[in-house]
Every structure is written in C-alpha cells, then in structure tokens.
Image (cartoon, rainbow, N blue to C red):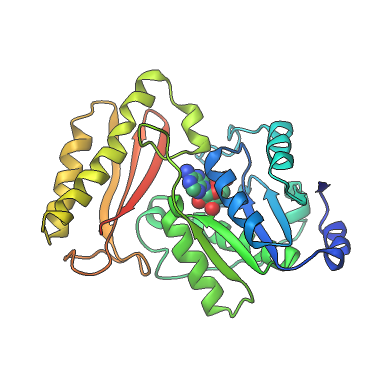
Length: 277
Ligand code: AMP
C-alpha cells in the first residue's frame, strides 16, 4: 500500500494505476462505516485510493477541528487489511498553500439544515472534494448515506460542473442498537452514548408512521420531536422531512421523503437520516 503525502507524487503514480479507480474520501479515525465504503470500492475497482484528510475549511471557528479524533497508524492497518492500494494523506498546507483563494459554492441545496447550522461547511466540503477529484481522477467516488445532505451537494456539484466521475452512495452502517457509526461517537460519555439511541428510534417511528399510512410530514416531525424531547440529555438542533435531492422541506409523504435530524448531547453534535419508504 502506497502512503502518499504530496499531490505531485500522487499524480506521478496515477498512470500506473489499473482502472477503474475508486476514491473513498475520509477524515480518518476509521470505523465500520468507512470500511463498508472501502469494500464497495474494492469490489468495483482496479485501484482503490482512500484519502485521509481532516479538512480545516469545512469546520467553523467554534467547531471541533482541533480536537477531531485522529489515529493514523491504526487507520493504515485497517486499510491494509482491506487491500487498499493507495492512501493519500496530505498536510493542510499541501491542500491549501499560501495564497489559496478559489472555492466551490454549491447554492440552494446548501441553504437549509446543515448548511444553515454550519455556515461555510459545504463550501469547504465541495472545494476539498473537487480538489480530491482533480488530484486522483477517480472513475467513481464513494460517499455514505449517513451524510445525506453532503451526498446531495456533491451530486449537484458533479452534475452542474460536468465532472467526469460517478458518485456511489453506500447505506448507513449502524451499531447493533441502531446508532449510526461516526468518528464523533467517541466524544460521547456513557450516559450520552445510551441516550443517543433515541435518534434512530425516532427515525424508525417516523418510518412506521409512513408505513401505517400517514401522509403528513409535520405529523412525522412531531412524532420524532416528542420521542427525542423525552430524552433529557438530547438538545434538538433540527428535525425535518425533506426531498432527498433538493433538501427542500416537504409537506406530504407521498413522494420521496427523507427524515433528517441533528441533535446535541453535551458538546457533541450528531446527525442521522432515514428514507420514509
Ligand atoms: P468522514 O470521515 O466522517 O468525513 O466520513 C467519510 C465518509 O464515510 C463519508 O462519505 C461519510 O458519509 C461516510 N460514513 C461515515 N459514517 C458512515 C456510516 N455510519 N455508514 C456509512 N458511511 C459512513
């Protein structure tokens, strides 16, 4: 497995890679969710490239960039065990050298929810993904449904800017009790970790309502809200039902409807989502 830190070196290696090339962008501190993306890429690709880069530009000034968990050597071991060919792990100054001033701004789909709660977040995400796509030139890039609005933003960017790759979305991997796997789960103390199961329970309750014939998005939101507010450690940031492509709020559950939420437990902010089918 090649571990590459420089963009120039990666571009030198590129002509020797067997195509198709699969790229899995990550911020490291890997778990089974990331590994599921890697396995999907492995089964589709001649060459699998995993990037590990805690991207400073997608964190707000009061967010957790400084304390974001890191375990680089352990990550490399996990990726070696999955038969990954290349790990790209640049330093921040390699990606954002002195004078960097070009950004990708995806409008509209970024105006709500995560985009509203985390100003500038999706500009950082879209810019770093565009850079990674240019550096690696993948046939496909793999993203998790766990970050559903990120998926919508990247798909929009690829379509709008005619980028030459396919975006593959992998279902959310969950702990046995339903909590979506996330590097940020490591911040949770035992009581918050136990309380955090309320997120998936509320999403499943909304899906059950839909399956039982409910067509009202606001009824589904009220149901999720009641369940989450019954947990004293949970502080709701948002709960909504949206169109999974535009991320605009929907009123009826007749079409495609995605239940999405962001909830804080102490200083840890968790997101999750479920298609109401
Ligand atoms: P991150 O390292 O958090 O930026 O995540 C890297 C990629 O892994 C993103 O495309 C995430 O959506 C995806 N991912 C994170 N957690 C999960 C999960 N529990 N299941 C599936 N994909 C995930």
